[in-house]
Amino acid sequence: MALSTAFADSTVSATNHAQAHNDTNTAVNQIAGFYWPIVHGGGNVGAGITAATYIMWGGPIAAASSPVQALGGAGTAGGAFRLDPAFWTMTGFVPKIRILWMCHVGATAPAQTLTCGLYPVTTFTNTGVAVVGTVVSGTTAAFASPAANSHTLTTTTDVNVPAANWYMLGVAVGGTTATSSSTQLVAQVQVRVV
Image (cartoon, rainbow, N blue to C red; front, side, top):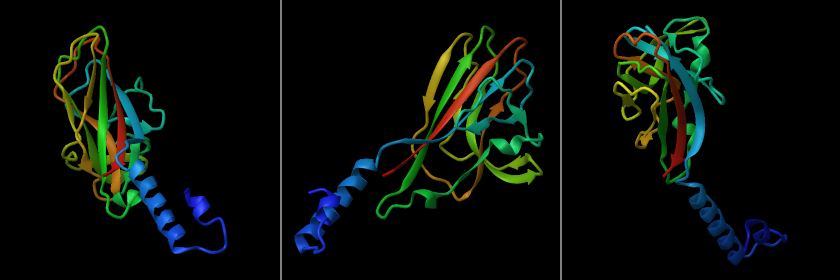
């Protein structure tokens, strides 16, 4: 009996009530465990980028061809987004996230390790992300000197949704990238309740 059928008439019997409860539990169990994309992001690590942590652009349609940005840059707050475990509160379930990290390298390899991760924002300056905290454990993917013309997908394991805060997708560049290199990084943050 469907939930709508259980309450179709004005009298609710114990049987109808129990069936509605079972239908609700079935619906919850059917959505629990599925991954839902909640944030997309990306950025291009171009030639001559020096060792530092850079911001990737976030949003439903992030341009992986847009250059990654240094912390403190005007407008970089546009790459920040809000996470809060309370957004996905369901009794008896725990919200988890994972990140699909994609690395697309052009004709010249960067000759550096690019380590992508989810960072908490600790300080905004006007429209810029000025300071970030320590990368969230379990959200990183290290692309160690990826080869020219390579295309790699790395998926993190599930981690609990971190504490309520502003976050950004970032990349720690290990050293100055090679002349003429161009590496596009793309991320998809997914959530599920288990």
